[in-house]
Image (cartoon, rainbow, N blue to C red; front, side, top):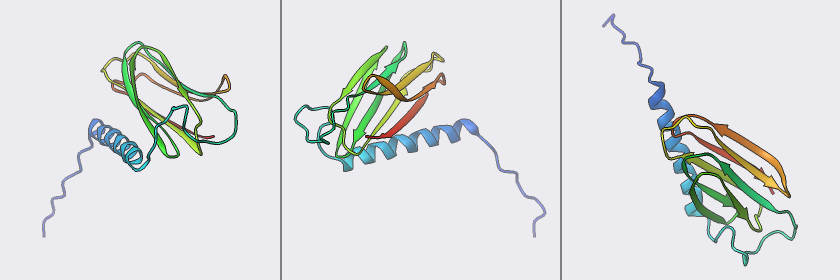
Length: 135
């Protein structure tokens, strides 16, 4: 019987990377399962007249995925951009991530009828965030 027990090595950078990859994979799987085209004016949705937008504010390059019940859309850009979300159904999930290693701030907001209802921000290198709301 050995008296030697090796202490586990803690590598927070590796853990964060694995968590980020897991989050992205989960969102992509949800996108593959869903069908339709988010933001198309011909999509059927709820009869409510709420106007939704997702706003990304950052100086650098970014990418992400928007999803609502039955629809997904890949998004990307450089700098600030506001994306219209036409006829969301059930819920709205927005995931964005920085495509560079800058520590510049990235802000994401979900806007309903001109009012910010959800927001998050990150200044981490390659930072990512997800916002969710029922619609």
